[in-house]
Length: 169
Ligand SMILES: [Cu+2]
Image 1 (cartoon, rainbow, N blue to C red):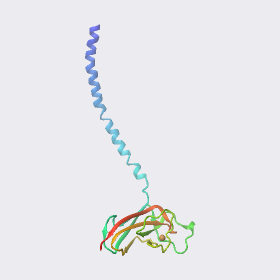
Image 2 (image 1 turned 30 degrees about the vertical axis):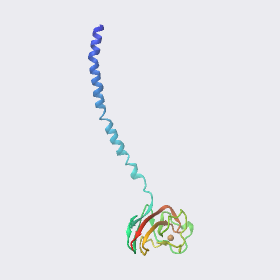
Image 3 (image 1 turned 45 degrees about the horizontal axis):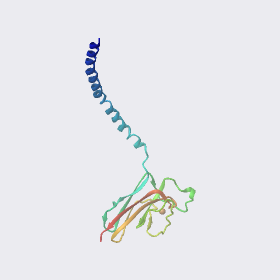
Image 4 (image 1 turned 135 degrees about the horizontal axis):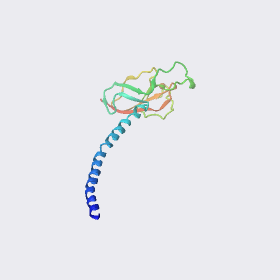
């Protein structure tokens, strides 16, 4: 009996080892499908995430060297550009999600809620809802800031971009 048991163990062991090896090999393929489903599921929430509203310079590009007059084009995403209403706008009449561009020449972004009073030096209002201008700039480096304002010309949080350009002589 003793001999037989050892012999059986001797026969079973290699088989068991083979089965472990086989199941190890056979076990490998299942993880890849699981790994494939994970990336496929990951991009799904991305489109559902709404793009953060922003303003940006379409032209010129940051770091560009340009000639004066400088052709500027402004872009916007996730927000609407509309002409400023005629007459006095009551604070409660300010339209949500609607604004107009402001260009600051050699200016930084202003804190959210700052009123860009008409006539503020170095700030240009685009109150008709336009998004382009050709502006004369002195040769040399310039900082250009695009800032969105609401119907009362108050800066909208995070809706600002600054670029640096160089105007050729
Ligand atoms: Cu304005």
